[in-house]
Length: 261
Image (cartoon, rainbow, N blue to C red; front, side, top):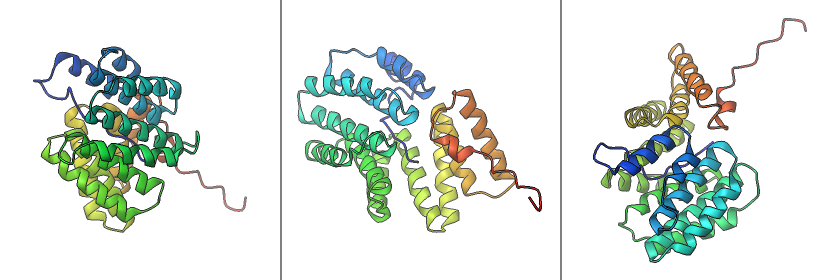
């Protein structure tokens, strides 16, 4: 299961105290609390608030109406192309999440919204990296087109590095590694998964650490693979079973039936 990245503000010591507080809550799966800290009447604050609530949907499979309401506010308050593009990018991500989790097929809406965002966000803007990443998610998990996904992830990876967006880099490393693993490139996959995990641990991105551990385990052999999965299970339990989709990946293998039964 693929999940989202949102630009990692608040992750360095020189950031605005408000953004630091938002980041600390977000990284611990407290999206609603983080969103409540943001000013509801500014374009930038409303887009960020919507992004947090959209991310909550993808991780918890709950809160869909709150995210829709926040998106409508963000769309109404957007004044320029970049703000409208950012809101469209979140609209596309929410539609993608609803499709991925089987809530409702909104793939046409997702494609249209991300296409609209691409027309509004300049190629060199920081938000373009996140848009490219999300177009990669759509290509990989909905269109089942790994080649298109890889191209989009690589564009996002390059742009995230250029803009020093470490959180997004952790996502592009992980998804490029996932494609490599499917093609049997185990060493490349292991390197990408390890980089993703390293960044998330350094940032303190607790809610994303368990998925990173589980992904790296898939590229390792025992006993290291078992150790990584057990650590992922510990963090998963600590966060109350979030992200929900990780439960399937971390489920222990079934106990073999006794011979002759």
